[in-house]
Length: 117
Image (tube, rainbow, N blue to C red):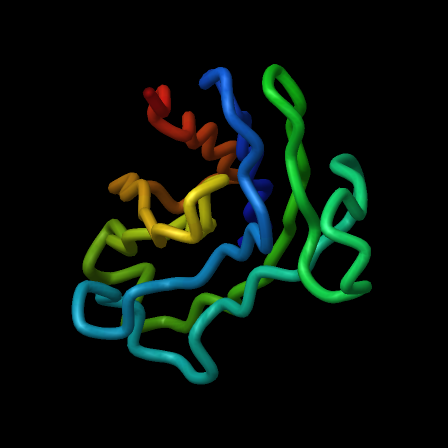
């Protein structure tokens, strides 16, 4: 099962150090390991730190992950998961955006970062 996560900054402030992770506590797949989202494209290095990607207002970044389903997943008819986008705003305040997905097909998850005031 392939996952594509698109994180978009719809606010007016920068989103620094954007990462995406899966919530192990809400993942119902029975195979291991848990999907591990990896950065693929988009965003910039606005803070000059060379670490996680940053998003200007209106910008987006793409992350992907793969999970191998097994017979038990097929028998249950679904794999539930919750992806989390993490970032830090201009005031160095960390925020998160959650998205729940229930599917067994190729998944496109679009996470919108909240508008920062």
